[in-house]
Amino acid sequence: MLEVDDVTGRIESIGFCCRECGACCRRVAEDSNLVLVSPAEIRAIMAATGMAWEEIAEPYPDFITAGTGGEYTLAWCIRRTDEACIFLHGGRCSIYVHRPWICRTYPFMLVDDDLAVSECPGLGAPLSPCDAHDAAADLCRRQAAEAEEEAGIRAVFREAVVPPGKRAVIDSEGMKVLDG
Image (cartoon, rainbow, N blue to C red; front, top):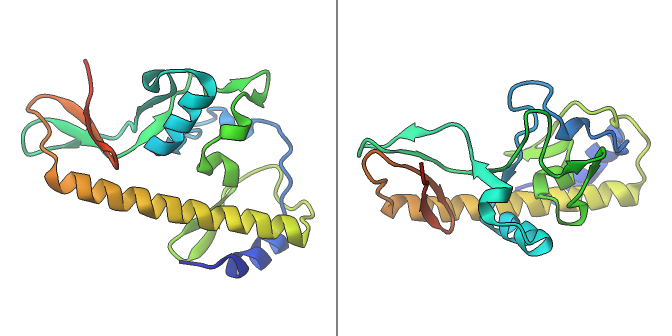
């Protein structure tokens, strides 16, 4: 894994300032605003909003056929309307303080040992060394949280048996068989 100092200089040289345009929250192409979330992130949003799990999250849309004839997916996503994330209200994020890691670190992402950058109107804006360091620290914390979630999924997956004809989500907390 990359260290904060490995990433800070690259982020500072790219530059970024969120324009609060909400473009990353809107659907501009199929799955362009697909936000993967961990069970811990869903629970934090539940605590902050009073909403139920199924009001916040939906299964990641790509299912894999299990040997039992059932299907499973390995992730949750924030629910969306046809136009945008359900938490985008009046062009602003209604759960900003509790937003998931992917939103908190956008447009940056660590992929293996490299910094990936998504398209965003805020790129290229001057960024202070302190702000670049904070962004890099968030990215490293995100990468660690994602690695922990992946390890949990692997542990659950080894024991999971999807019921025949059912659909399920396998995450770090267990296997959740979906209704309908």
